[in-house]
Image 1: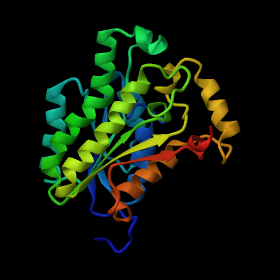
Image 2: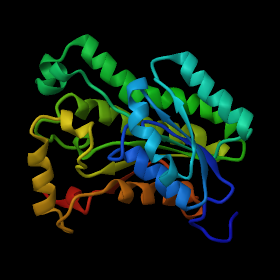
Image 3: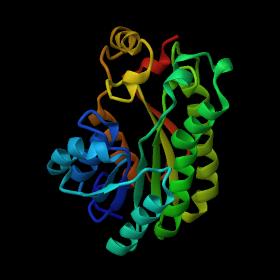
Image 4: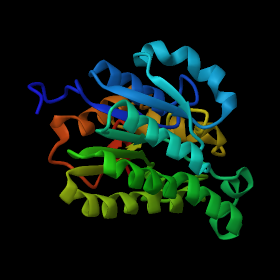
Length: 258
């Protein structure tokens, strides 16, 4: 137990899904570094390397690894490297989601089986797979965190297919928290408000969502990747040691509005 409850000194982990400076993964990695953590940070496609390599200084020069969650050999290599480097893990951040454009922009009732399966695989089941491989390395407990959105709970215009997928992800968080709790492993979802990320740009009429959040949220502003990062530090640190199975809204209070 650290003397400072929000300290991550001596903690090691993995942050997945870095794409560029607007990524939630970047905000998480930067905040975790500032709190004292060491980490491996992953990006999902070779084309992303030129965008993520210049960011390493702000994240404390973490080790960067290519990890496409659909390539099991890359996932295995990631956890093998974590085991070789530290022999343990204290946290894992799952920050990735995807749905084919045609399925995302259409009605849920019209979505294709292949599109639904791909969205569920990358956005939800990949968290379960990563958790399964992190579990043996979390020998003294740890924290698993994924990213959701309010559209998992309520119908949000144009969120479409990702609503059911994120609902499955949030339910998975609760079941995994119950299953892994006896091992001291805590599981959470963070649900940010609209953030102007590359992933968000794929949502049809995203700017309408953003403007609504800016004008109707109690704090009258959008969430930032740094806001999410600070929440991740709270959950992964000693300050969050009695919390698990939660979906925490980091959305300037927007979720309380009708």
